[in-house]
Length: 435
Image 1 (cartoon, helix red, strand yellow):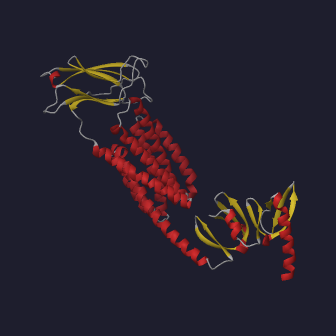
Image 2 (cartoon, helix red, strand yellow):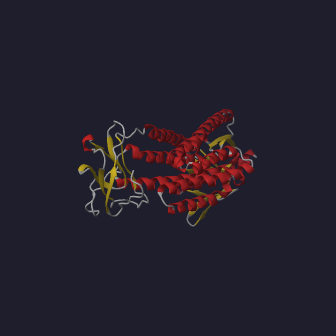
Image 3 (spheres, helix red, strand yellow):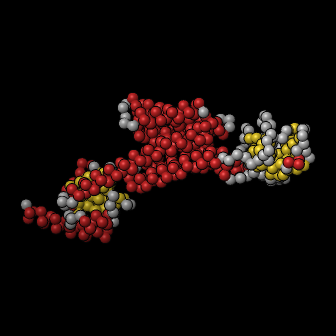
């Protein structure tokens, strides 16, 4: 192994060293790992070329980030074997502090990296499955926590893929710079999302402050020397800020806070004791170990909520004077007499109720128009009004509006003015007779 920092960035570099053949009967090779093109010789015989080294960007062709040059047994001498390496690096995306990871003579082929690669890929599969599960839950419940957890799982899964890319794909060395930047960016995004989730769950009033603090602190990590350090600091920033919030929640006796705090503390300790291990491997296991139990808990809660909703709908079937409202908060029976108006909102409707209450209902306006009793009238393409609460209509600035006994006036479409007037006239006749 050649010691020290070898830096061919922006220049044409020549190296030479006297080496001994590795012991044993296995074949050997010269391994070059780093952001550079290279060509190598052993005892005057050319072993091969990786890309095309040159004295400028125009003359250099980028080589692979990792390459092995097998060495024929006949090239070895009993002693004094001279290796010459010609390197250049003019196409790097970012400037690296340690662009060449190693130049060494070692047995060929290199030992299998199946296990180190398999662990991040298994974690990535679990994380992508968790992301899909949280996305499905979000589509059903529209809760911000499910969306945040889906993003957390997806970001961690992508980073696991990027970490394993070097062992799977023989990419050209410029890609290595993009890969390192991508790993840091994903770590930074994960850190901010983790803080956002923990704060939203245990201390929602402070969410904005902590998220802004996390963004600022993570941005500062870009100034650190080396991408491994940048990535480690970004992750540790998210873990530490989340642990602070969890500790406050434990003090306030919030359910689930202690378990989260212990989990965060374990991985902060792992990051301090084994920083390289956290970045390369245990981070993905941490993310999977945190998110998969949360997914299972959400699935259980969703099943219980569906069961409760079904039971509530069954009980409400015999209550024709009520509207059974299905929303993210569960099922609620709302007396029809309390509804002032129904306003369309895409796939949902907003119920405007007495005393200023508003409630989202998972139903379409057209369906409700067919189901509600005749006292409810479509007065606008997006509004159904309860005429029992109407006290007349007015025309202002060329627009017709229905006046209600509570709340703001409702818009009346021109095409429906006559129907509204007739309905109000009929109501005025019927009410005295019934009295």
